[in-house]
Length: 99
Image (cartoon, rainbow, N blue to C red; front, side, top):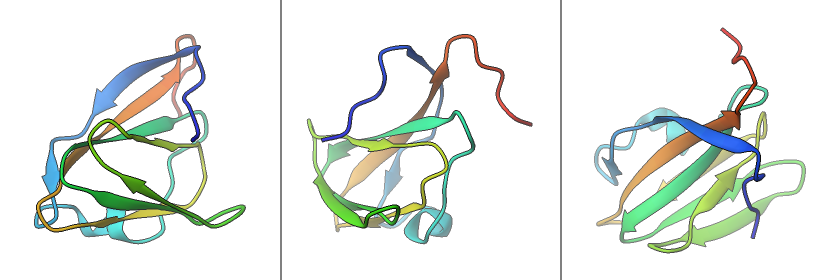
């Protein structure tokens, strides 16, 4: 399982999503900006986190098992019925984020 580097700090969090309310953009290939990491936190139910590059990988996420989003890597999610989750974004403490 991938882990967040120790030198990161959280700076932003999405609202909670369900399989009904998840934005369509998360269901298709997308990526974070350079220097931006993410953590997919499942509160209830399950979802599949698909890393699309450089090597395709599919990870089942559930409460207690989060997913790590690496900067600029294409990924998508497949929510299961009854899922509740959010995404928290991280950066290095002294990094200025791109506009």
